[in-house]
Image 1 (cartoon, rainbow, N blue to C red):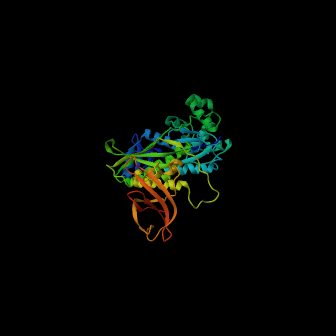
Image 2: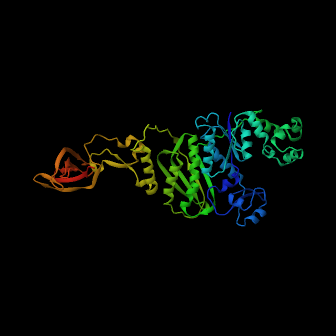
Length: 479
């Protein structure tokens, strides 16, 4: 078996601050000690483990936040849902790591090196700093990653020597146990493995030896694998209040990347999203994002969100934002052509419709489909774009040749010597198509339609009205 451990060393900080970059240095504290800090704080000498008062002395403008274990767990679950696109065997390695069993996925993703690179790139796009180590055991990979190492070990012999060099604090988390082992001269995992097992078990408990055996592969290490939920919901708290909607796009992009991985793991897509902006007093602004066809591309969703956010007027500063996708549908693959198609692909039109809807509003962009009506002015209606609904939009009974461009109202044209004129005499090419309809609703028509050619060789659609409202009328133009 082959395992990859994804270790998030700055999870306490990034779980709270990855949504927005701030100019002030940031630190997370617990029990009056710094447990994590960002690069700006480190540049001023702040380090994990020092007291809060010492950290403030080094950086007077340091923004201090209390540690939030629930937020860290939620963030780690989000990364697990995203990582499930690489393998269904994703398990937690508390409190700040994941382990992935990737033996069955290596060929699909081009080998372990490419998979690790994709994992690290995706974590960076979601706002997390990560390390990835590969080993034949889950515990061994986790220990290597927590030590700040990123090797790719394939054999048990190489794993034993790599683990032996690790500092003892990687394998022993209890402070009193670690202090006692240091007192007897054990400094590395190799030193621990060399001690008499019976004595270790009597003094420190069997659990310490069990962990050591699991790391080396001498003992089974069963894992409860993460099961993604049926719906996607993710939330980001903002480190500072935001008053400009455009500034929220940075945080929203990270949620869309998380959604993309979640949907890839389920081989699904979405047609509708909701981006929720939370203000003071539990007030929320809901921004719906509709797609013509199911998709999961983070870049495309970000583009639509940018269009929507540019038209939103915020009722107040935003403190948090959330992304919800409740309707997940299967997303089938698209066949690829051997050669590039210069005419574009159908999804190019879908993306154009989605961008126009995001900018102008859903009701302002629609398709045109036929209606069961002979009168041309009533023979079409607004509907969903054909690319989203399929062929049924264009299905209608057989009719004569008609132009795409109909005038808003028929325009009278002259008749000279029984010949209709429009910029000169018109030559009748096809017709007549007789339409008699509408007697039941007060809009009765009796017309004979013709396709005619102008002196400039353009094609127009004209008709002769029968009955009392006689004469020739121009009703449409052929492109």
